[in-house]
Image (cartoon, rainbow, N blue to C red; front, side, top):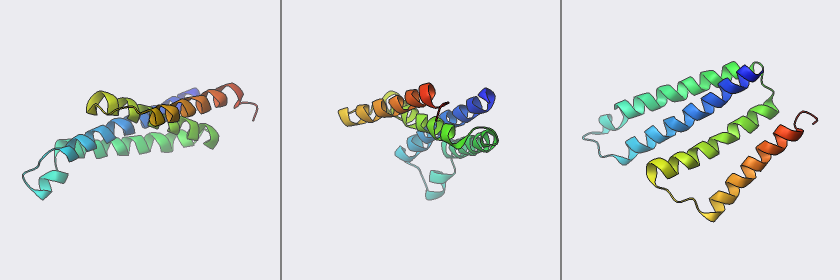
Length: 116
């Protein structure tokens, strides 16, 4: 099951990177409407989202839904880190508290999830 959980976590990570590419593309000026949607960042971003979906479908064959939801929540952590690194977005107190709650939930599941 560790392999499948790792594949799922990899898919969440890839989806988070894809969101960065799509946002970067949306922030740029494009010479035409068609170029706004047909450029390398958008195409690669959607290809990465497709790969993330395949990872999830593969992992759902073995990973229990309860664990899958916990792994999926790591996407919020990845997106916040990528937003800070790539877009210089501030991590407000509210966002930091949300991340602490997400990480706490992941830890609670890791420590007690097997008994539930």
